[in-house]
Amino acid sequence: MMTFEVASPSTALQPYLRVDDVGMRYPNDNGGIEALRGVQFDLHPREFVCVLGPSGCGKSTLLRIIAGLLTPTHGEVIFYAPAASRISLVFQDANLMPWRNVRENIALPLILQGMPRAHALQKADVWLEIVGLQGFGDALPRELSGGMAQRVAIARSLIQEPGLLLLDEPFGALDALTREKMADELLRLWQEHRTTVLMVTHSISEAILLSDRVLVFSSRPGRVVLDLDVNLPRPREEEMRYTSEFGRLARELRRAITD
Amino acid sequence: MTKQEATSLPVSHLLRKYVLQHRMGFVLLSLALGILIWQGITLTGWVPAYLLPGPFEVAARFWRALLDGTIPRHFFATLQEVVPGLLLGSVTASVLGYLIAKSHVLERLLSPYLVASQAVPVVAIAPLLIIWFGPGITSKILICALVVFFPVLVNTVVGLRAVPQNLRDLMRSLRARPWQMVWYLEIPAAMPVFLGGLRVGATLSVIGAVVGEFVGADRGLGFLINVARGQYDHPLVFAAVLTLVGMALALYGLVLLAERRFLRWQIPNIPR
Ligand SMILES: Nc1ncnc2c1ncn2[C@@H]1O[C@H](COP(=O)(O)OP(=O)(O)O)[C@@H](O)[C@H]1O
Ligand SMILES: [Mg+2]
Image 1 (spheres, rainbow over the protein chains, first blue to last red):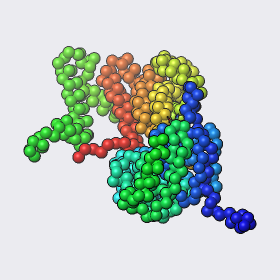
Image 2 (spheres, chains in turn yellow, purple):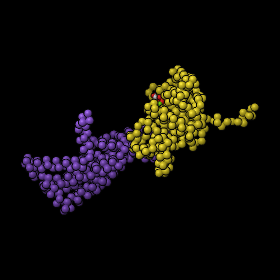
Image 3 (cartoon, rainbow over the protein chains, first blue to last red):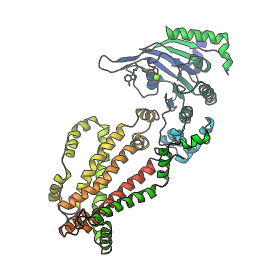
Image 4 (spheres, rainbow over the protein chains, first blue to last red):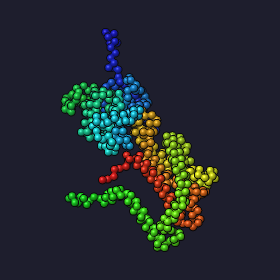
């Protein structure tokens, strides 16, 4: 019995990363702002996890810590994935370089990695098509709508074929219809490229329709108050919103958020 | 309905469109108007002709000085001071500006001197520089560099401070190396403000050279103005001044060309 248990250390259970007792206190004049306290969770390979929580509870802070842009003041983020795998962060606004055209913006990560420019631009063209922006390669960011700019940002992120994709309210600036379309595209890309995704969103239904698991954060200092598995079958349709299981999940999430 | 809409197109918009389409024509028109007024003033006799020579007299004098080599010789003498001075001043200013923008310690240490240096008029330092470095070309280059230095420095610092933090974060999340940060982010992002400083510096450098030549020189357009004034050759004074203006405009135009080239992403589309 015992041997059997020990002999099958399932690699599938090895997490992609562990957020281990992470706390973050921003310094200020009176003792600092405590954005996060005792945040603890694992992220498994190829999982799609959404984060919900009131605004100002430290969600962006958490993503910036995982992306390595910030060092937590307590705890650590442990990666079990091969060191070569890349982390890519999609910011809340598209964050494009206004002096580079769309194609050059998408190719930027590859150029920074040292890929020859012409080759990188070719790859960018492939991604232009994937996110449905063919014909806009030479456009400048100021000529794009919010939704198009955000698609460019997502293409720029995915062109790196990241092992971990961090998304900070990526659809926040979009209208409802574009939002749904973009979410569909993101799901398709995630299924094709099998990356691990951690995405912050404000929308409960978006979280349920997209993710394998939803983490709910408390208000500041943020910590995980609910870690909910979403076991709805994929592919998920818009109609699932009206099923009883969806309703149950939504109610549970709403209760956790308002508590 | 349709007619009303057509006539309600703002006149200012049409005018702007017209000016944009006929830019060169308007430059010529404005020149012609200026010359006409100038000629008008000399014809009225308000100002004695020996004090304010008419445009045609100046043109004739310019033509003669051009043919006998006076203007070209002094033009190139001044240009030899202005161009190296402009380069020296803007290169040192942008390097120092970069360091200041990066280091608050350096900024605190240097800014009192930089501000104080601006309070000292060039005319006051020019004689000193000429005593230290001689009446030759070196002192003029240094004077040019000095006047160019400050506007370029300030604009470099301001431009770099204005690099958006979220683009810095983006570059960091893409694991950009330090030189990539400079090349792919900081230089292009700071370029608009930097070129604004260079535009001011380009015209100032011509003034710097003339100040230096006034104080002590044996060639250059500033020197020529001094000599012509001494000989009561006022048409030549005017001809030399106009040549200086031309030089400043040409340098200014070069910076504008650079802006066209590097800031195309900023230039709004011409309304059609
Ligand atoms: N750079 C910073 N300096 C100081 N305080 C910050 C900084 N960034 C965020 N905060 C504070 O930390 C808290 C969490 O911020 P954030 O992570 O952006 O929240 P969320 O993304 O969940 O809205 C907020 O109260 C915010 O004011
Ligand atoms: Mg946020």
